[in-house]
Length: 430
Image (tube, rainbow, N blue to C red; front, side, top):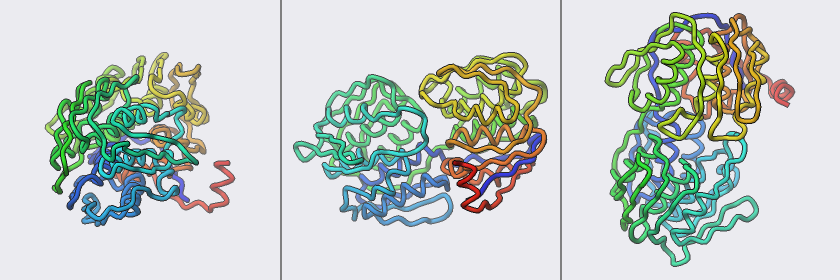
């Protein structure tokens, strides 16, 4: 077990390079199990969630070879299993993408109910609705999802999602890639990682059009071939460093980004006093004056992302005046607020709405991360705080951020990893 120790109060400066997108990588890795041949995936983030997905692939029978820190070769030709262990699959929410992949290729899948961060009710009913429309019988038994194509192979169909859902859009798109005939997904999610998964599949021989719009069409193909594909940069990691500069001050060049993907984030940070200079694949992010209040509501892309809500809330704690943050996606995303209050934050939460009264500064405190993005928000607050902040539960952070401590140190932040005895960790986390 480890904890982060941060001595705050230092403006950030320098350059930071953004890793491959976590959420895109999870979809692409699962989709690679459709390919009979060698898939070379580049710009893979070196994070726990990716390690778990590759572990599941190995359990299914794929050959996985790490070429270097950011490139992996996957040969799924030898996959014979249609189920991996409960222990491997329950640790990560992205494991549910294997339902679509295995169902699409073999007509059968047994996958544990997904894990991941506790953000309230996160049902998979829209996934099941899509699979059933494609001709599958789906049952949940003893913690596992059992899905079987009634005719041995999925059939193209019309799928309309009752709500916009990234996970179900990717999952049904993967499943339909090798189904017989045409599948039309309406009310589809438009997030960049939906587009990236579609682009990956197309580069391997799929026939998918419309990704990035609310109607996606998939014409089923007989098989997919191997090839090379590079994951897009992580817009949420980039946004996290933008929020860190907002809270701590300074000027940072955020490299390896797609500025278009960040517009939903930079627009809101511009409102609160941040300045941006855009380059082809980089953004110069600066804050010199005081932050200003604003109102934020998280929405599906191209709205402000829910995965950036804790980070901008941490920054708004230091803005002048009263800001209102409304969570439009998940039911339980304000659990981290109690930790910010330990640092002096003035936040009142009522259901999905947080009212944030600006304070002069944070004070360092002992904290515990309750989920991935909440952990990132605590790091941001710690960097801006007076005094020392200790953050436990950092395994949540390392699920989704590659080398965060190393990258923050490269920007002048005073942050270190410290080993924690297991008993000490358990007593603190409870």
